[in-house]
Image (cartoon, rainbow, N blue to C red; front, side):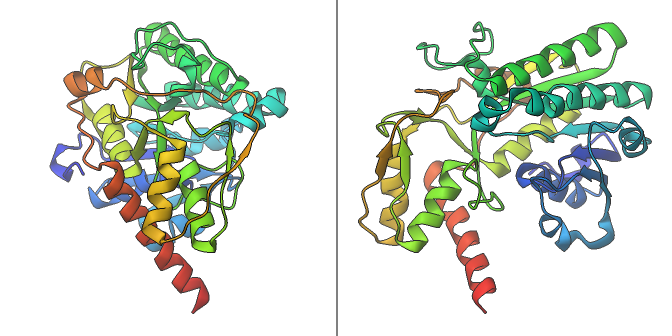
Length: 324
């Protein structure tokens, strides 16, 4: 984690800050003695993710589509971390208009509130989904986007809006294309959650997971602490405004291999149940992090085994608390 002396801002807003990634960013900022404001409508986040911070965080229950609430939340902030979104590919396929109202118009409201309130920089969560199913590996930022879902189009539109606000209004923006993020606090109860959290919940119950496709599709899994590191670097470094950066590990495993690793740790033998691929799903995903390494100084510190171990330990502690 980046020590407090390296932060060059004193107050930040996190949209979606009660969610999985946003709450981890909040923890890092509080640890660095940064004042933190969180806005979240709690449709996908939970107050319990921030409960351990007590009154060290200013929490606003609100929607990013509400301009007045966003203005209030942004006031006095130097940096905005924009994590709020409907993150399910399948949900955007089923409801493209509804989800665009949040992912497109909501992001535009965040950027405009930042511009109007004098925020210095906005760090936006984008997605590796923008690359689509281009067979070229690894995915590099200069590749032509080939979105395969409304979600991917929405994230790509966010990037274009961010670049426009940088060029047109002088608002500093940095976009981070997350690959497959996992770690503590990822909600396994949602069918749209990350595959690692779902696999862990299934393994603890001794129930085989449902794998969409043949399980040979590969993913670049990155631990949430490393994603936080990338966000703090993107928020603080000068000369990177307008930039787009992959946030992954540069390594990938198949979904079948992932299940085997998790099942082996739990000590169960339960082959997956295979189902047809879902619309919008990508076959192969592997990041090049050369640009993030050379420009941001980003270095992932958790390999997959370490990350799985830390995540599994957290879920086990949660299960013990709930049963006691």
